[in-house]
Image 1 (spheres, rainbow, N blue to C red):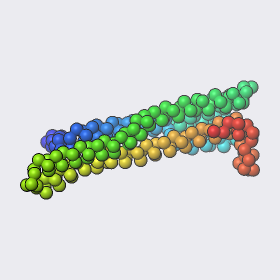
Image 2 (tube, rainbow, N blue to C red):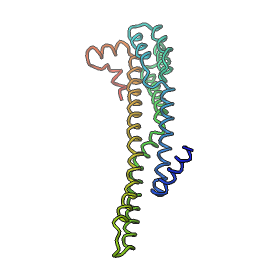
Image 3 (cartoon, rainbow, N blue to C red):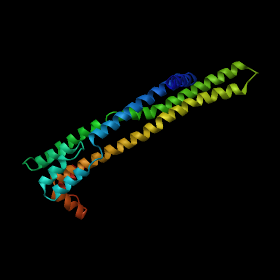
Image 4 (cartoon, helix red, strand yellow):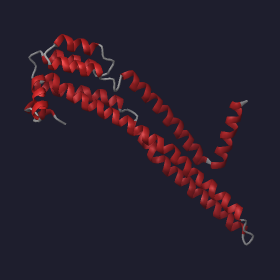
Length: 229
């Protein structure tokens, strides 16, 4: 059966590469599981889907409170409840400075959940090449030990075979590390854009007129500067 043949080939690959390759394959499975979970989490949280929120901010800046609330309610983005709370609180008598701090703290808490498991992916991306290099060093040691045992009757194919098997672990380590690092960078960039948007949205909701003046003149209002990161 194809599945049995695949498992047999995998066992042969692990036997050839040794325990280091087995560990690297385990890390690749773990990285793939984490990446798939992050994709699902980001999709469920509506990361990047900010059209309705941008429309809400435009309505709010124009003074249309009802239109802004309606647009926020239509948004699938995870920041929508935070913006709805900000709109409700902005029309109350709460202190603007403390309100902005509380909203920013809530936004950071939400973004921290999106960043969960990033350290695990970063660790896999960093340790996989090192494990591959470690396996290569062990393989080279074994190859030269066999070469020494052969004495004067040295078979070049023996040395060449040991070297390519040793180098295979480095190749496997790089194959695990490179896509993991690229995907992690992409995920981090998406969270960074969410953080920038959350900060902008909070400032626009708390100071709609001031934010418009900032855009027109290129100077930030004092309230916004007080909360800029």
